[in-house]
Image 1 (tube, rainbow, N blue to C red):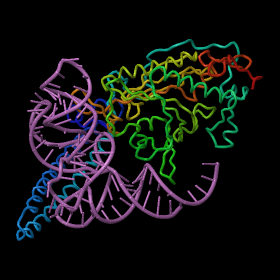
Image 2 (image 1 turned 30 degrees about the vertical axis):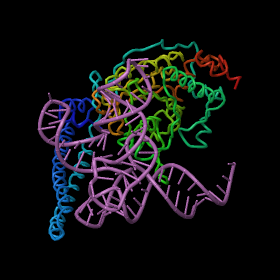
Image 3 (image 1 turned 180 degrees about the vertical axis):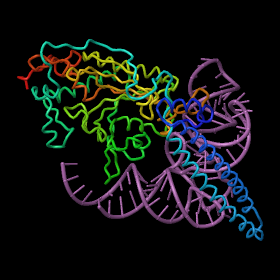
Image 4 (image 1 turned 45 degrees about the vertical axis):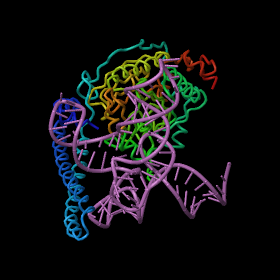
Length: 422
RNA sequence: GGAGACAUGCCGGAGCGGCCGAACGGACUUCACUGCUAAUGAAGGGUCGGGCUUAAACUCGACCGGGGGUUCAAAUCCCCCUGUCUCCGCCA
């Protein structure tokens, strides 16, 4: 939710942001008009209401014989108030609709334009070279008995899979490595519900344009979350947080469910794009003044993870037109996937400033004692998808895979896994 | 699955349809007292929005789980929803 005060005080900035995202800047003028109409309707209602309240006091203290006349007059007033209140509610709803078309204000420096207009901030690691034809993760997964896609499809359909043996252990190890990394950096682990009520799904903005990405269970009117961000964002809704000791950092561990409705034919091979996977997600409630620094910290922690796993990657500043509606800036880290000859997204971290928190009424107390929306940030610390880059990057000519040192303690010291171990 | 009770501010807990933004306690903040702490005394409070403002102050409206309704007037009466708890049954 956009800050209505900003809409009034600096409509130009809002217009610029909408343009950078490729949205119609006219949405801003419509929202401003709706805001004015809303305030006018509200003032009308409140004036009448004040009159009615005053009248009520007279009725109470009037002598008995004067009461009938007063009540007759009061009845008229009551119907006027009722009508004015209905108008005010309508105007309020109209404003909310208009305001919802305005996405979060993009931070200065974010590249304008669409998906292809991202800026590469830095790259890390050499692009790995092999003196044998590298196998893709599906082939490696089969050789190692680690990934079973055929049976995944048999049991649940396309984009489902079994992780088995080394693959299953690898995912758990990866999640545990990430969890320990989070713990060292002061995160509180949280295992979140993956089914949420419609209000929470709506409040976190996932039932907007991307509603068809979300699994819905109509019998119970519950939604399966595509990321623990949903539950983590809802966790402190309607609360005033104490941020005096620094930001509140949570590491949410959950299974994630995505319909992938708009991506038919895309990444159909393997486990790159699936309906169900696990993810360890960082989620931070921060003072808005500290949000951009915190965002840098989140990227840094993500990079530490990828580096410790020996993956080559680039960090990109995602273009405005490719940001989610709540994000003011987003950094993706894409790891090199040898058999695809390109970088693929492994992590994503967004700074949502106060946009998400305003709608969820998550506030903190400023120095003056007033409340203001907190800034929320999120970022991936590990997901199932990482297995793709891990297997492919660390493969050997015999189809075996070297385990990065950081992961070994989580695999009972295992340094490598070969087809004959399967 | 069946039956019932409850939902009030940071917490506990009152609350005849108008005198209730809400008693009383506790916590908290400020001040006083005390060499310090503790204790004691006094005072003060919430949230959201509108108006007016650089801001504060001021002022108006709304908020007693959520949504409707009755009424001139609802924390209070009625209906629906959600949640919590208790008992019985069932399953583990």
